[in-house]
Figure 1 (spheres, chains in turn orange, yellow, purple, green):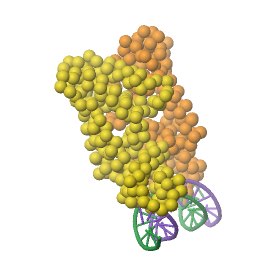
Figure 2 (cartoon, chains in turn green, yellow, brown, blue):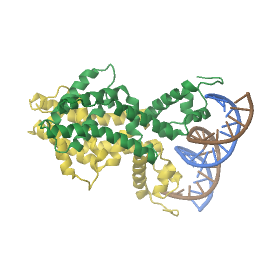
Figure 3 (cartoon, rainbow over the protein chains, first blue to last red):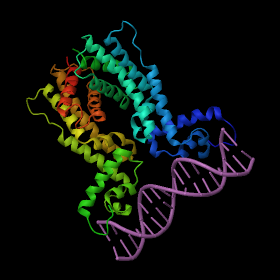
Figure 4 (cartoon, protein in one colour):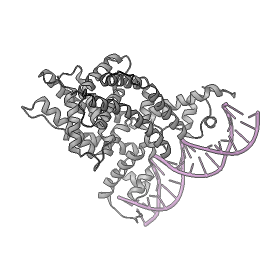
Length: 195
Length: 195
DNA sequence: GTCTATAGTAAGATAGAC
DNA sequence: GTCTATCTTACTATAGAC
């Protein structure tokens, strides 16, 4: 990847973020050096600082962008949707969205303790907002008499943990297709909150 | 913690492991220095090398000991136990054992990528053995007609992910007692594999 | 068994040339 | 916008005195 001098601001920025994403996911934030990231991109370490004030900002922006994408893409309830239909949509969405972005998801779960305090608060707020979507579905389902859930907050934690766990074993082209995985998990989620 | 010279081999070893456990769990393996560990114990960095050949071994032994304890403590099936009773015992055991050791559990999940390859294989074998215990219960329950689970391997992953997730939010002295948490999760697990 | 001291390396970030 | 060079700091691990 040796390069001579030149100006490539329009492509270097995204390439830096992509390299940081891959390296942070594989080796962990603390174990990756700015020199490694620069090496992947094909520039010298000093050049990174034209694009990020420091290593911490690189991590924070990867996590923030991922969670903002997650919230923007999460299914919205249409009038007339039953809680059961909304729960199925949430379940399938969560599995599909997360398995499409294993590196972003891994970082968002593993690197929370490497965030500066103010950055941590912002990321936590985004995560809490997402969990709130599922809690809302469960509470509505309980009110409607469709679900039996003693504690909707805990049930939301339990369902999200179960679904996010797919990323620890699922591989494209493996024994099960994504559709089959969605259906297996939806079967368990549906029963776990059933009356 | 300033200390003068002296011999304390019988207590220094455990104190080093305890300090490494706490620091690795809080800041991550790669972000913790041998000097930090030594500082917590009250010795100089060089003294650590009387107890461990290197930093990697410190991590590996913490993870190995934790998983060996887990396997040794996991409930064994007695003749005549129904699959349902065995699944309840497993569920309650997993929650109780893990919430009693949040730092060990955290490290065992978060620091896998910092293990040397041969150490990784040994840790993975222990984890697989534990997952196999739950798979056995589920398969027996399906054969007996007590459970309806399309894919026992995936169902085992799903249940373990759900249960391990308790550690991300549970705190001693919080809104719910451990008994209440066990019962809430057992209710969901039981239903999720029900016929 | 612990200390002090240090070898040897690598980190994050910056300065100034081009 | 990128390079080379460097500042400053910190790291793992070891050597030898006590």
